[in-house]
Length: 100
Image (cartoon, rainbow, N blue to C red; front, side, top):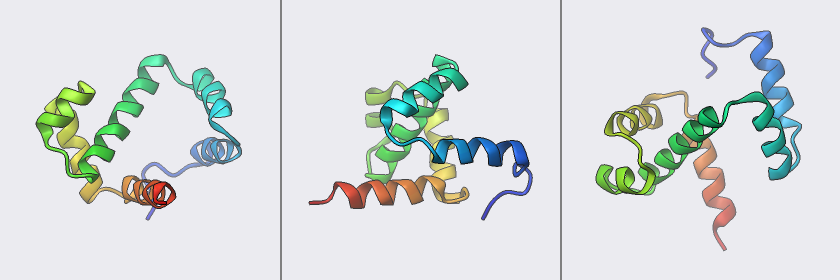
């Protein structure tokens, strides 16, 4: 379910643009232009935290491996379990694609 507080035409346009990217190289090109390096690294770290939580890692393991604070880990865990379902959707798809 899409949160009506964030849904608008500008985000629709951004997401439509992202869906048109065809490979990782294009993603690097696009996101390097759209985001700062720190923004990209923060998003990547949050996604790595979500993946590790999904796989059952402890806070201590995640903190050690990612450098994320316990506050970040807690926030990601809250969204993983009580958010819009985006993390779970993508993590499940990645998991299915990686199975032999």
